[in-house]
Image (tube, rainbow, N blue to C red):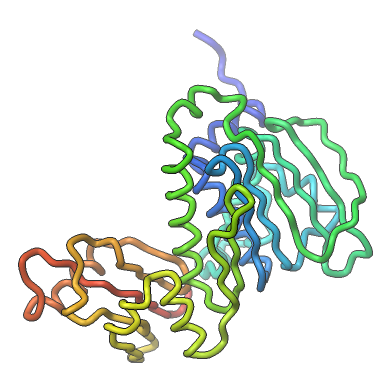
Length: 297
């Protein structure tokens, strides 16, 4: 029997990557959520080969302090929580502090960022989670750019489980759509193979919200839905619910968000179906985009 010994940080990161990074869409989700937590109002994504060859995410958020750049690639390091009280009132989208080191351990990652008070940016590059990395100065606007190249290049067994380029991009695009519906106040663009796929402007009024909904869910949904907005007992439920005439054969247009985070919950789905039970038959599915707001605790 071998003796008990601590795992190397590189191996620990690769194990964590199995939980955090399932496919290119997982990387995109983690990186966009970091951008949103940094206060970005503009996020641009560039994708190649369905995300396997390249994922580049640019934002205009607050950036990372130059002294924290290398630390951002180490496990359990985060700016989002510092005490147990923070855990019980989580307001950020990501908080485990494992996304960047996990992604870096299975890709060639380049992180460039300029902190909001810094005169210039800094960059750091790692290949498969290299331990010997150097931070270098570079020209960059306030915000952060992260490039993830050759995903799973050093874990070929993981790469074998990826689907076709088209399928992987479909999963990735679905993540971007879900996030696009969660934050109307953030402009988002998506390019694949240097071709514009989506470009949604930031919206601050109801008309802008409707345009974003129409761009993502389709104009017929907006035209055949009712807008709702209810408040009771410290809870607010608002959004769009499709009329019974706009029913679907499958549950492919059902989005539910809690404090800006998308959730899939059988209890919520059942409650919505019960509300339609007297007006929708033959296994038809309702369409809805709903937002629940409640105290973080």
